[in-house]
Length: 202
Image (cartoon, rainbow, N blue to C red; front, side):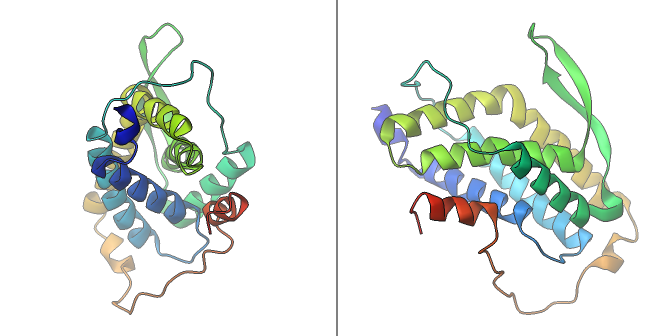
């Protein structure tokens, strides 16, 4: 039954990595660009893999599902990403579908793509974590379809850009921080944490 798929191993793993990505890109920190790019490369690779393993489910609702990420949220995440990328912000072509279903290329910045991915994943997580199984199925179904048609190609385009930044910039290694004990960041101001408090999840 589809109800069981919302609690499957692959689904829970995807929810976990999606939540980690959302928390990472929205946090306020002084992380160095090279560290930010390196972490993103790993998160996006894991996201793509976990998305390909999601089970196909049928939506329980023909209406549009609820959205949670506002324009202000998107702008905040985009600016956070831009600040962390610094001089490594870059523009590249992203294959997208127009209204007629034809493939076209949109020129987007890396920070914009990261914010679009955040919007897709955060809307999914927000609806999924409400705990209503019909809503969870709707969220999972839409996330899978959107991955196949839209954000999967954006993610791959971002991965290409990250790969080029990491392996074609000779001086990026000069910005790598020295090894130090991992400090748990203060998550109280993160949008994701605020949403969890609003929904009574923490």
